[in-house]
Image (cartoon, rainbow, N blue to C red; front, side):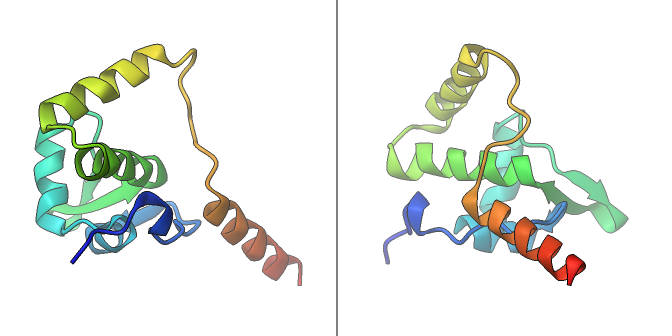
Length: 117
């Protein structure tokens, strides 16, 4: 079975935190792979709460999608992907707080419209 490409992944809902199961579905990566990537990529640090449950934020879901793209679509090794992410962070003119995601924007607008009635 082929892995879905980045463009085939579902939109990321407008939520503050995601469980490991939700991230697994949003990024088409199994939970044990996400736990492994946490050990390999210093940038990936989900919040841990009750009973060591992981909660990922939106920017971490985007990071996981980027790691997935580097490893599965571009053929990088773990070490190479780590170096690329570090290089990309250094090359950025300023820290990027959020990357526009059409799905997230659509969900946020829908939520606002529901509130406004």
